[in-house]
Length: 158
Image (cartoon, rainbow, N blue to C red; front, side, top):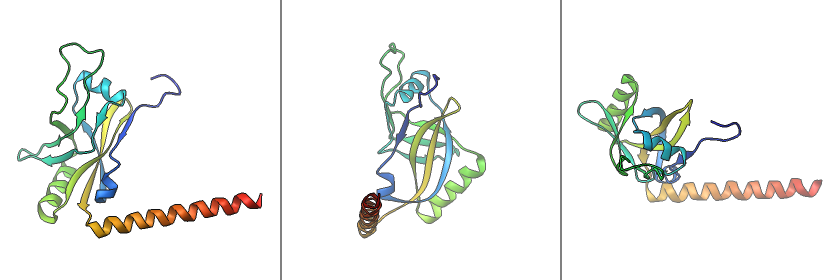
């Protein structure tokens, strides 16, 4: 990678609004060659994606869309296919237990590069109720107004 160029990072912005994120995990993802190039170009979406742990113990990413690579040939990948995630065995058992017993769901939060490899930050999440969403929006608005007033107050003193 050239100096000064940062790799693409794809975020799931709605995740913190829709879900209460209890715990975060980092996982590898199994991709094909043209998929890696598309992710590097920022042509991926994980807004509607989710993770399920299968009966065979393999966590799979469903609902993610990685666009076709523009300079690819007819050997390009399918846009929406299930992709295997690479976790440690202990993390898989913790995720599976939480989803089965406590009613959690597993949501991808970020897709990014780390040392030349594509990684997925996955959150163990619990769905928010409507009043919880309203409350978090109120808190965000209050913090934004406080920051605005503070910056205006410090700007006048100078």
